[in-house]
View 1 (cartoon, rainbow, N blue to C red):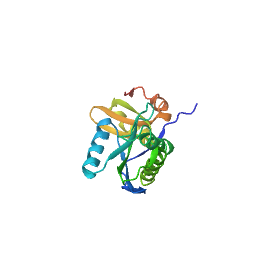
View 2 (view 1 turned 60 degrees about the horizontal axis):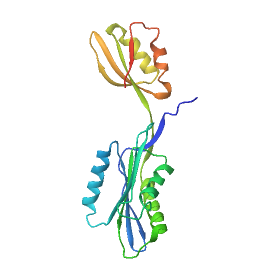
View 3 (view 1 turned 180 degrees about the vertical axis):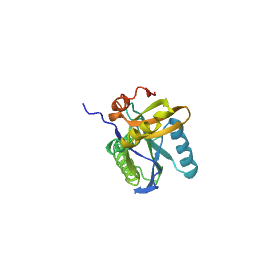
View 4 (view 1 turned 90 degrees about the vertical axis):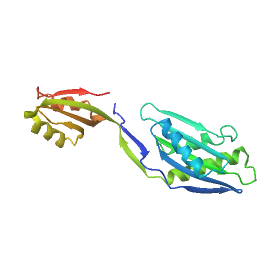
Length: 203
């Protein structure tokens, strides 16, 4: 079975987007996030920026293989805001992301159907305004070897296009490397012939 080790995300916040429906104004935003604290921080920034807005509805998704998510209606009728926003996150197949739609009430009620449509559109615009990129799920390893093995190890890493995250070069050398999940098992094969190279998978 082929291992899926690619996911989509964003690396910087989107430009603000604007959507208007029956007088209500919706400002859409997308942010890259990695923790719930990041989510909180982004919401606090928006609350300062839009201090007279009535609703800050949002959804977020974190993780690549084990995914967690939340959708928040922030005072709108149940499931009329957060879930339509989360639906767009799923539709664009992105993760490690927060999408927020800030609403200024325009005096006319939109009804549940109108709200679902408006928040969906606002989220869609924010995601369309984002630069979505593909990243690989990587596994890190620690290589330990004597200095005399340096050129051989480096040649393999270069040939296989393996990323070095950290290096300690002394009599005993240590290299922390990062390998795509789908190619991770092969790493042991690369160094198998060199009995002087220890390889350890890192959590």
